[in-house]
Length: 223
Image (cartoon, rainbow, N blue to C red; front, side, top):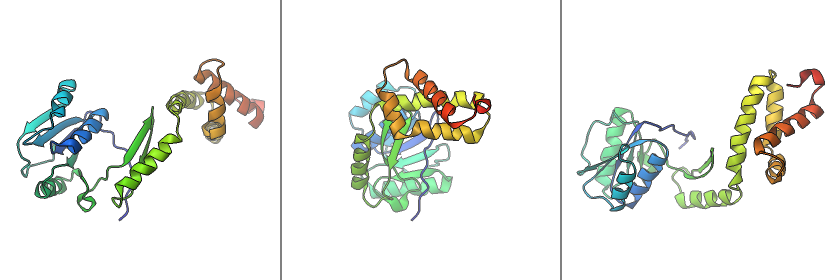
C-alpha cells in the first residue's frame, strides 16, 4: 500500500481521541503540542489526563463515556486508541462516513493516516514511517537520525529562514537564490557557520551569502 507523506497543520482544529489509557495520553499530548483542540472519549481515564486537562483547559475536553457510533464530521482527524477492537473499528467506520482522516493505533488497514516516529529541532521536524510494517524499526531509525542532528540545527534553520526571506526581497533571480540557499544548506557550510563565534548566526549567514555571491556572480547581478 502506498502512502503520501504529509505534515498536518492542526492549529485550532478539532481532533477526537477515543481511549483514556497511556497510548491515548501520548496521542493527546502530541496533538496539543501541535496546537489542536482535543476531545477525548473514554469511560475511564489515566490519572495523568487530569494534569493535562489542567494545563490545557481551553483545548482538552475529556468526555467520560464509552465510545459509541456518532457523527464525526465536526472533527478534522480522529484517533482510535482504545483497548477494544470493536470500539476502534467503530471510530474508523464513523470517520469513513464523515470523510474524516483517521488513525487506528496498530491497525494500519483501518487507517487513512499513519503515525510516524518523529523528532524535532526547532522548525525542523523529521518523521519516519514503515507503512505499518514495524513501528519499532521506525523508532530505531528515528533515534539514529536524531543522534546525527544537533540541537543547534533548529537555530540554523530559523536563521536560514530569515536569510531566505531577505534574498526573496533583494535578489530577483530565482535560480541565483536557489544556488545560494543550496550552498547555505550544505552540511559543510552549516558546520562551519555553527562553529563560528563572530556575531549572531543571522549575520554570519548574511556574510556567507555575500562571499558566495562575490565568487559566483558578476557585480551587476549581486543583491
